Length: 497
Image (cartoon, rainbow, N blue to C red):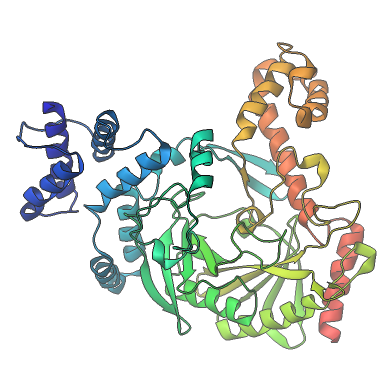
């Protein structure tokens, strides 16, 4: 019993030392925690040497042991968020401090909010650290590969209980503003310690937040205040350029707005950004072009597995007008020789994944050409990971993958261990998951000519090669002779319109 008293005192003391509370808040915070932990009394018995999050863990474990919370992942996360909410500023206070710091610099403001989101455990730093990250060097540059182990998976019991729960439309989705301060349940993530920075983008209300399970440095999300679907149009390009004008140290992009080409959430308008320098941003220029209507604009075709047109100029209006022209042309463009068809009856297939950034004084906008057609041979998508690489990645190729960062499923970790055991002749091929057996056999031939001690590197390179193929499959104009002839036809057609 005395140990929990030390934990409470230490947690409150650390919160004060870190600037999340003041000395006048000490008794108040102690009493809030005493109530949460159902204690009848409290003694200040000194401090421990644990970190803020470790003391949070101690309190959650105590609550679980005493039956205050259930022994489930969701119950634990809800209680964690409620504890950390006590030391998180109210939205009004947070927004005031953010915009005061913005007067110093945009970077000072985002750094303040980012560090707060890490310290209050909204950004799950400890879980993110579990991710397996490596790089793969290829002709296109250095691709980033991540096996995502950070998101906790629900138990079978939790899934069953979630199905039995009465459905609720509040919040409507995981991105809605109504998540700010929301307790959470089996169907909704705990968001008591969640905060949004309110900002206006071209006259519309948006909220800036960080991703709880970030895939890269300062992975942030700009969420529209209304629950409205994703759309790619002139407004999208204008908003992205306005955001990088306000936060020039961040890139920002949007998922495409069609199934297969988009991300996992198409129902709520949002953009994603951050400070990571992706491989696509560093890609070599394959060819430069001049647009007849925009002679002063820098137009580059990138050497990248997906088809990317980069626009650059110091005047964002020029970039915006050119982007709209290219987008509108692409919407109606077909090239049957390359399986590119703009429409099937009234169903649109063409769209764009746009990414904006600042490069010194210039505004850059990358337009990644996308198409979501399917056929009998490629039922999942003609420009989608094909069947022979889906054992590594079968999900949609969204904004983050487009830029060169693979987000691979957690199942891969255990499956790769089986492949490795087969390559070491520890298990027969039949014990390798069936989806990986052909791959394992092909790797076996490579292993015969390689040092066994380099097996981990060999498998990582093999995964990297598969991700390269994933991106190449998603490219509408391949980086081969036929594909580049097709890209040239598109650009010629654009200038001749």
